[in-house]
Image (cartoon, rainbow over all chains, first blue to last red; front, side, top):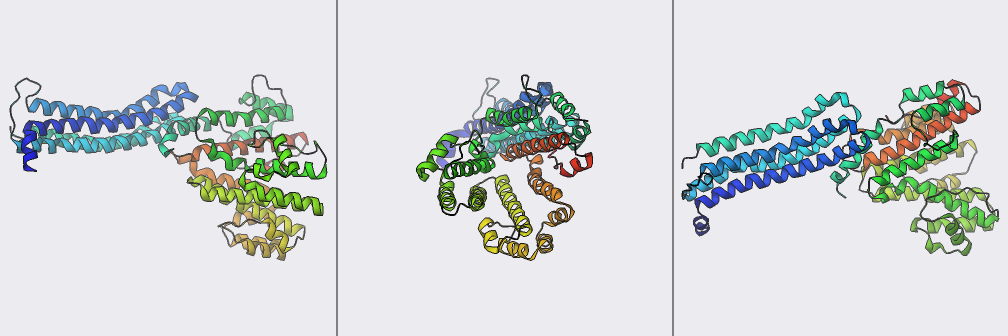
Amino acid sequence: MLDLLENVGGTGWAILGAALAVILSGCGSAYGVGIAGQAASGVVTEDPDKFAKVLIMQLLPGTQGIYGLLVAFITLSKIGLLGGGAEDLEVMTGIMILAACLPIAIVGLVSARNQGKTSVAAIGIVAKKPDQFGKAMLFPAMVETYAILALLISILAITAIPI
Amino acid sequence: MSDTQYAYAVARIRALETSLFSSSVIEQLIACKDQEAALRFLQEKGWGGADTALNADAILTREREKIWETIKEMHVDMDVFDVLSYPNWFHNLKAAVKEVCTGESGANIFYEGTPVPKEEMVRIIKEKDYKALPENMRQAAEEAVEALLHSGDGQLCDVIIDRATMDAIKEAGRLSKDEIIRDYAESTVAVANIKIAVRSSKTAKSLEFMKRAMAPCDSLNVDALAHAALAGMDSIMEYLNGNGYAEGAEALKESPSAFERWCDNRIIQTIKPQKSNPFSVGPLVAYVIARENEIKTVRIILTCRQNGLPDDSIRERVREMYV
């Protein structure tokens, strides 16, 4: 086990953290935007005038993917990979960066999936009562709160880790 | 198919639900002075097609076709909807049995679009090739043919096939993973049992007849219901009051048409929770039932208007709307 930790190296663990942040939150967003897109297509099939409203609903679960990307950028910048001056990190430092990336990776995945499902339900409201668009948008927007909390913790933790 | 796979279809149904008739639209239809005005009103609401004649049958037939065209466009598993068509499938069996056993060709009306076409159904009954029928029809077909050939009792033939229809619906509900199918099956069979009890009580049928006609279900004890029917209408009402069907007892007390209306309303009440269900096949099934109910209600209004019934009599027969 210790050999594995040593062989991957501190930089390797940090890159794994950045990759997980992008992969997991991106997968969640892809699912959420996909399912909301199916529902949006159903509404637009019958009523093309609602395109703009349902498009906004569809885009809501897409933010987690962006948050994951942001955290990955900060991580890569932190370990010097983006600036071209990469240093060999201590294994412990690399693992700490990996741990710091996990909040947005995991919460991003789960919240984007659930936000997608909530968007589908909200698109149902828009389909029947387009004048209730504002209220309908609040329901999926609530799910966003937890992705933002996870994003904050990931950014704070990564920036606070001394290299 | 996972529940989320219905996201497109359910959202489309939500958009379509906005064009379902509400109670206020039904009131406007009742307010039309004659049938022609009512038909024009329906056309203004988009009923019928561009080339559909201003004729009640043509418009209503076109509307029924539209239901299935819409559902088929959604590319969902159509087997889920079979349970809704069972009454039509079994009706065709009944018509074929009577046509073959009585030799009166053309006297019975067959539904189109059933898995066993009319000609094939008649052939099966004629040649007694029951294995060619769907499994849930075989035994009933054989028994109905034997009953009609040996006793000439058309009513017994009807009872056998109607009971098989109810058993098939109940079994479809039992095997279904979808809550709406289970609820629909239970409500349909329970309401059918209550109808049998009421009619049997009015025509003084025997306990054996009722037991033969009624299908077991979860919300009613058919044995107790049959005994109540033997004792009279008051006993039926008492039984219904004590078993979650108090509204049915009230309707029964009010008038026969109020009772018939309650029977249909009970099904609509069963499917109403689907209005807030964003996933699963439930909203699609509910939409089909709601459209059928809407078409039935419009047909009742048009027929009443044609026969010059007063508005109050029409309102008494108008079914509860889904939206």
